[in-house]
Length: 372
Image (spheres, rainbow, N blue to C red):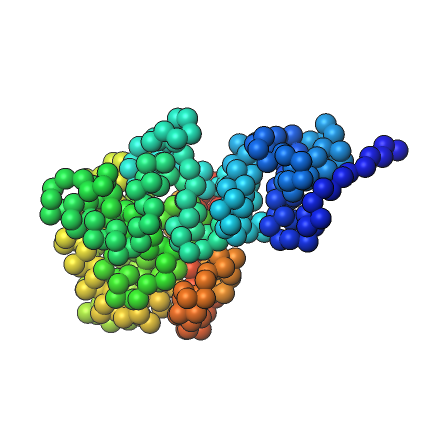
């Protein structure tokens, strides 16, 4: 039997949490046959110790280093260097493969190119206060990520309106781009009902993002209704779920505002998705939607979301998360965690099983996911 001695030069390597994390990152690099940056392999460095230890144990018996694995290790390393928490339970290479994209949802350009270029694909946290965890990560272009740094929902709204008034881009993005930023940030940020109700769904939720606001969950489901032929019948079915004639009339007025844009859109593909997103930036569509959901109220919107979530969705699947589960791994700081979770818990007590919506593309009829 092969035996070897592994030397630990740092007395704190197994006691300090950061050192243990670094040791495990080094270990996993070696487990997949990868070499960490040379600066981290210096004598006594816990990451280098983990790499050397795994090399001694596994030798050449390594696991494949698929692109998602390389990305997973790169994100873990960057998070450790920045002192940011990283959830290993749900944020796996498989999850990163599921949220991979070929097109930037903000700039609408193909993703690709060398690291550091404007169109290079990177993974960004939609909730900057949260840990690296499943449910609020999106793949977009490096240029879009750079524009979004330090920009929350309110700031994105302000820049969108400034770009509208100026008629030209503001800090690299036009008004539609900034509305898409506001939407993306809003999906993973618990918002007051009135604020969420006035936020257009300028970009359809990326795969596996959990929608924390019921009104955006309903927006996503209703928008998905228009994504394939037969949308008129599906809209009629939603109208029957509304509790009053006046609300059904309001919903039909909203459908009437959306219909011309849906009819003019391509039958499928990115062009149809873009048309559905752009429809939400139309003043009449926004006005009809806001009148509907504000008339429904928060409880009525949540109740309608619960019922619409049970309906078949073209190319999508609906998955509901319990309030605590939706953000548990995000490790939100105390200054934001209490009010956010209080709203989610109260909402969940009325809505039953769910408080966040996750959207995944359908590989087959059973693989479509819109979680609420």
